[in-house]
Length: 168
Image (cartoon, rainbow, N blue to C red; front, side, top):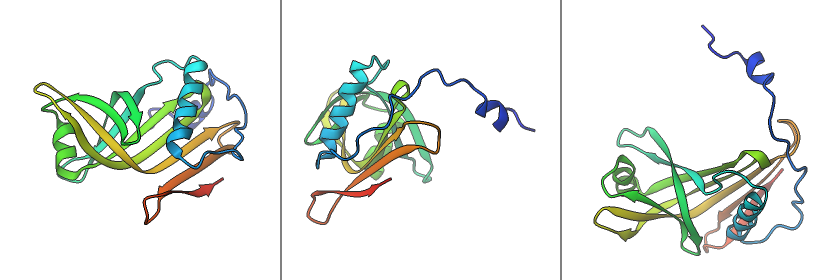
């Protein structure tokens, strides 16, 4: 039984149009700067709840688990977000230390995916601040239909320096 058909989903009106093709020729070497630039553009374009980010972790059975939190800040140590002290998210990060982040700024049709290592930045009695130190970034900009997009990825090399690994 099909609950939502592909024809139905393909026919949905897209409420926001892309601002057009992104100039991928002038990208900073540091993906943190590119993220900050895109974040500021999202704010300037009135994207709702621009700091909302999906945090994905892995449970003890190896199954993915995701939830949405608010980004507190980004600095040279990584992406910082808050959480209560005794949650499934905290237990999973304490066990595997692996985490992924996904930002989706719908009106601009942009997404940023980050994979890295999670660590506790502030160990409070009732509230913790965690950070994800990026090891991999992927920037995605859909500028027309699903076949017309820009994608750039960065990874750390063996010396810990950022390297662009793919442009499409």
